[in-house]
Image 1: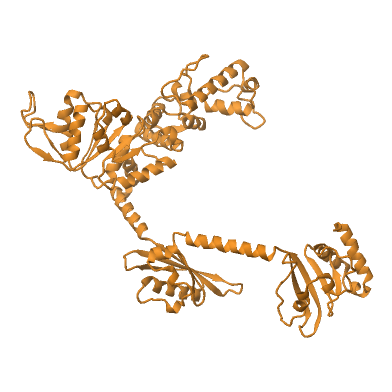
Image 2: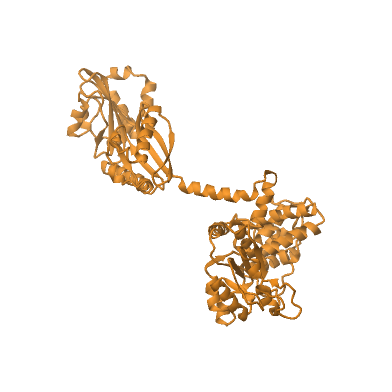
Length: 607
């Protein structure tokens, strides 16, 4: 095949060899425009002889050696059916596939089919029929897969019949989708099936009004459904298809009822926000881990199963337990919390079971109700269950099994109706192996285990928690503190071995001790900035220090030493062999003071 220049020369030669009268009737500017077109163009006279052919058509047809102008077009386009197609009597000529469909030829007739005055041919490269069929097959397959995997029921209908009904339609309505395919709309069993009556009505109304419409119906099963009809138009604006979407809103109604139940806890509009915050406590769920946890909490709060909360110290096990109580049906009954490690062992039994009148010397005249009795009807929260002595573990197990207890020195058992929530920051399985915790009690408590993630595993919650605590202490101490951006960066990068409790206490400390309203890295204690990390050639690992913390601590010391030796961040960057912007960014992250703050680097980062 020749290059474009040779094509233009060939076209010019063909034009020059042809009758000049043909060229003279067409302005030169028009010929130049046709010659530059990206679509192949061929002009024919009434006898189907070529009067003009542009370079693109020559290129697409391979620029045959014959002199095209004045020749029959069938000598150029070698297809036995082409001639019949071109002179067909139809007013509309559909595209003609040439060379197995790699070129599609369209034609415009000049004059009438009976008395043609010529033709204009337009050539466009296209995919083969096999490729087109395969593409259409894949497209139909994808569309069908989308419809079948839709959670909502979907019906596709034309003017008369149901063309498609997906599997979800059968799941929602109980009607087999296959029984509707190709069925006339007027033949649908609208007497026995409320859904089909609604579908028939919706299709009719959507076609008539030519706009999206929605109906609501209640099925015989009691489920409520929304049906939405969407019209599909042709190029003339006529409705050729109607797509009906069926959605079961029963679950949404159920969730709406649950939300209403929750909102009953804080109906007072004047204090709605404060009561909502009190309802959730110090819980923030911005991270995926906490959202999954909250979803689990909302589900288990509605039942009475025993729950074992697991997590490091300070993650908020007591806060979660309180939330479960507020969400449960027992929210109007007592919530009794006890730290099993804070009660002297000699008093544990009398604290849990209470004692009867005269049970021992100095016993109160009326006796005393124990924790089980105080929590009766509500929830008993056993924090740090791993600290409970073995002898009391056996008695606790019996109370859980029998749902009854007896006061120390008493003679009468008391029936109990309470829910147990236990919590621990220890590895109970290891304690069982070591003989410090009963296996049978473990399985009594391990009905619904709930693992509360550490704060370092939910980084997205650090800043929202910090801001929530800041607002809390600003109100409490009547201050107006705000956080600087560098401080927020340091808080996010810290590993928080004390978890939420550590963050809570730190924010309170900053609010009451800072000498400025804008809290900055300078106000942080050394335990957070890392300045109290042991220096020296040997790195000492603490029990709360993981690999990431160790790497950050070493990196901070290296940057600090390089800045001390170099005198500023630029020299420190040269000493360490890194970009200046890297030193600035990491120094800010670790709370290191920058020198030469008046200068600005190439990227606009102040040193």
